[in-house]
Image 1: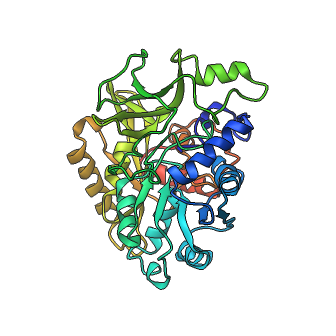
Image 2: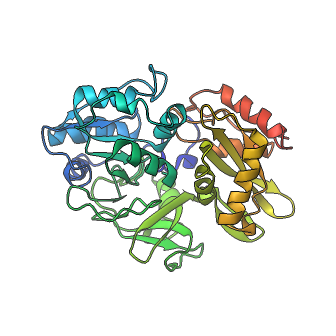
Length: 398
């Protein structure tokens, strides 16, 4: 799930109003518990999410209970409640077999405990697989988690509107080859395509809009509550006959899908369409970088230019300017001069929703000097002042 997907389609603080058919939703959720999450009735399943988000009501409440699984309701954060070993303590104490959280949670743990010392304090023999969703899972986070936990780390993708995994690795049927950066393949009922702006299919490897051929499978949204016109405008009108996911990515020759960014986060640099997610992937590979975000800021000459935000690992005592210079060179070497990645700033933390989504659109508004509404879901509003101050050091936040 990248989301809450389509979060730009409703005003801040206004629910989207997704409707769900009860029967179809329960059938789909029940199917995923074994086939995607690889748990049998009686096993313990833990989705570390907020009950208010789609992950919460789908996989803290409905799915495990209808499938006969013990489900865990957890209140707290991956660090500071009381330490970076909170996840491992809960998993060990309750015998969790499958654990589902967001990549941002593991990035927070990795930043506090880069060597995984807290993991060694607990018996995690019960844990068989970990699932990541909610935002792009950068390869560096997946590799770190796999190395420290010694179990498969499964990236998968879905949306509030879809209600359950649409692109995943069906571990309970067969563990397919895992490819870093890809949540694997479409699940039954989903015929996914990559389209250009004119609605034409793109060949493997080319970045475009991710769409799903209609009709959508059971359990997905049939419409929005009292908003049929908004439903059609938001999801159906752009590509007739297809559901518009609002995400951008590409497929490889094997049919593996790579979700790179929200379509809003694909920036246009001097006529070149570039994925901010691809740049974030490169930045995250730097050994001193704990977390990062890349946004596109307005530029009179090139239309947009990428701007990076970097959070350093705890204990990293390197000069921030040195790390920034190395990161800029890394992007130039990996992606090329076409990215025009020349500016980055080190910050202590990134503005996020309470479920861990980075508020990139708000950061863009601050950088471009535009008015914005304080997101109702923001975890800590004070972070926006920190971002504004950091942007001022590199000539933005006008």
